[in-house]
Length: 86
Length: 457
Image 1 (cartoon, rainbow over the protein chains, first blue to last red):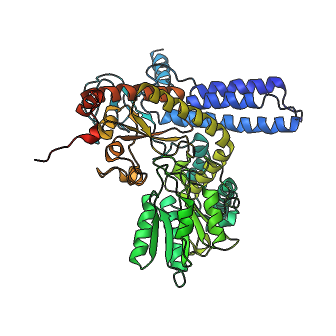
Image 2 (image 1 turned 90 degrees about the vertical axis):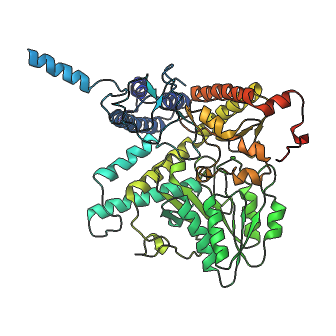
Image 3 (image 1 turned 30 degrees about the vertical axis):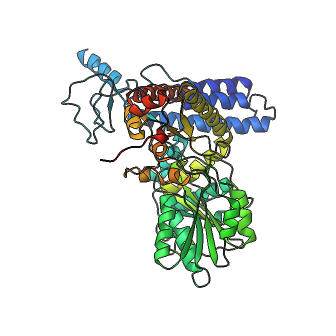
């Protein structure tokens, strides 16, 4: 099986960021920092391991976003002012 | 045609974006914007009350009391709450086997976080039970030859209370004082160890002032004097690197809900090489190597294991972020407000727990004023009484400063905006309360409060 290409990794990155926007500030930041931290990894085996982990995490995010919406409650006092982005 | 329109409208309503649903039952305490009335403990029937404005939840800055569940932890737990519901001690069918496999996997995850062997981890109902097992279990097992224990004055209530109950059984306990920094004096510890001392118990990170005790040095001292060393690491596990072999720890208490795991579960690490013998507190079917009988709650321990694994991966990232946010909070408050004291040693300190005393301001009134931020002025266990916290008293804080202390907690999910908002509100309300304070007026006029003779009637 061919190792994940640059295009695949980028599309996974975009998918995760998109999902996490509906979640909480933490996820957006954590995903961005994790992908940035590993951007210079060259070993294809390691890349594949990281990509597999990211795919699993994307599944977690999708499920948990859905559950969060089922049990949604009021917004935080700070979310009234603007969308938390850090 | 009308039916299709109606269906489409219904479909849109069902898949609407997340937000406050007007028909949803009231689940939590609600905070009304612009409402000055105190929060009521009764979930109000909001259908009757007129809508004042959007209802918003306060920011959560009290992570030492408890932490939210990490979504990765919840995701790991749910299968065991829905389909894989077997009893892990059932040996005869697949439900039991899969539950047991999950339990052992969780045990491995907890063990690898602290550098232990999975056989040394016993699941309990929380750090309080773990502390009870460690202190009472060790003391009672060696009761024939050893009758002395050592602990500190800043320990958690469950440790102090266990020691007190042992004193009633005839044991002798030394409560070591702490220095002004909150750290114990190692020479005092060495002097306190007697030939009949069985256990020394010192918590790793204090839950009220965030002070880190010199665990490695204490471990070295205890090991050289052949005394068992127990540490309550509930606030430290998963946040600072811990290794039970390097630090020569014999017993360690772990709490699930302090590391973004579920409430109602914890673990105790009991060393096997050299073996630490513990008398079991809870009798029953002999589960958990006979040390803690009772069915192991699979979903909860899976959650604890997942929380430990996530903590191990995220420890460095979290620590860097939390340190930065902590610096930001302290600097911004201290540069805008005079007469603010940070309780606890600033160097040997876990950055996520900041305890500040605001002079000339009463702590409770500041907490009431900061109603849109969830804070605490001391540990949740002692907040029912009006007395200032015993930890602050132990570090020698003046009575008036002890009453005006607030504990800020910064965790994995705290954002910069939340910290900035808290700082802004804190500064605003401290200034307002100080304006109203006659003591502050006197200080501004240059009067030394310590020189005043408060007359008695």
